Amino acid sequence: MLSQADNYLPEHHIVVLFEKPGQLAAVGLSPIEIGYVEKSVTDKKREIALNRFTHWVIAIQASEGFTDAGLEKIRRSGAIAQGILADQKLEKVQITDLTGSESGLFALTMGICLANYRFTRYYKDAQAKESPLKNIEVIGLSGIALEQLRAIVQAVYTVRDWVNEPAASLTSVKFATELETLAADVGLTFSALDKKAIEGEGMGGLLAVNQGSTLPPFLVQCTWQPTNAVNTKPIVLVGKGVIYDTGGLSLKGTEDSMDYMKCDMAGAATMAGVMATVARLGLPVYIISLMPVTDNRLSAASYAPGDIIRMHNGLYVEVANTDAEGRMILADALSYASRFDPELIINMATLTGSASAAIGNQGVVVMGTAADEVFALLEKAGYREHERVVRFPLWEEYADLIKSDVADMKNVGGRQGGAIIGGKFLERFVSAPFIHIDIAGVAFSKQKNSYRGKGGTAMGLRLLYRFITDYISAAQRQ
Ligand code: BES
Ligand code: ZN
Ligand code: ZN
View (cartoon, rainbow, N blue to C red):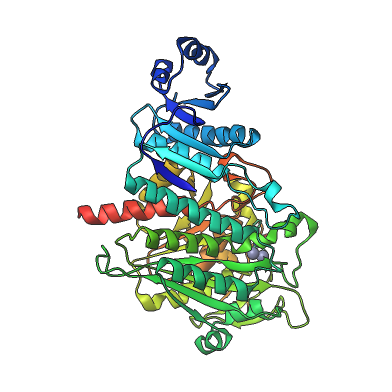
């Protein structure tokens, strides 16, 4: 679907990136057309579509250059171009560049490809709902950049498919199987603890959350350990895999977005997407992902407020609210991660409505105990990919809020600082430098949002992919 072309063919539909309108002569625009483009581009409208009868030319001005902000403008213009092409029912487009900026061309193609995603499985006439644009050719991207782009787009599509799939069909069993298939496809080592093994490990949190479900829990592990890895101790990625979150006995109300709680496994899905990208591109990094997978359902057997649970690391947790289930299953996975003696643990979860309340969908909330330089790398990656991060504190006083009268801790604090309390809870289960990323505000979008689309966004994937590549480069420089 995404391929490389050697040079621009006249008579093909093209999307072309330029800085000065005069450059457009190179793709055959006449002086009159160039004058029209010059007159038409403004700060707000950088995409000028020309119907040349036999083909369309969509000229996109990189008017803010190739800074982080400029690249985001280009991605968004890519999404607009995709919309124009799709409206015209065009099947094939060539993307070309007159600016000489590979990052600009990369961003443009990314915007077009990510905007071209559709989730069509559940339409009787699925074909009619698919994007007409089937064939995207890029001119002028290096082979390596094209491979990266393709791997990222493919992973984003997979993650979005998983997040969009209803819980009734993407059950815990199905999700674990899908992860196994993906791992085999890309060359990751796969293993999974089943319910018996989870019992054997004493993962009380994962088992408690699973109690109300008719389907079993899993702890899925994927490993990538190439011989040329820059690190000897692994990076461990942990992702929340709650297939569906009803809240359990602390049942969600209508205001609590139960309608889209099929997205509650977005953390696990995104971590799997990151792993697949790393493997497909053969990155020299030793990395492991752990995905605790279960439903949070309501039944006579459900765990209940007031229960006290013995967790994998031996701590006892008083369940004050069964809707704070993510931290219960993640805590066990984080504790399990210790056995790998990680150099860094990154957790990703749709953990709290508070994260969403705090910063909306313009970024993700992060916090943790990793070194400031590591957070600086993450922040830089966030700006680069426009998956921006906001660091919240984990000050020790917050721990007071999850003190329990009957156990080591309880699973919720008060109403205030909810995202931090979630992080503070998880911190008790890690024994390595730690980053927690709360994606509750961004994992699922009810409205169309440029190239992020509608439904599952896979946001966090490009952030972590960029972070990991920068992390590798930093290690190689040392
Ligand atoms: N899965 C939810 C968080 C969530 C909210 C994800 C909105 C996506 C969109 C999580 O399990 C949850 O229910 N959190 C509670 C925690 C509370 C009980 C401390 C919340 O945020 O209300
Ligand atoms: Zn919940
Ligand atoms: Zn949840």
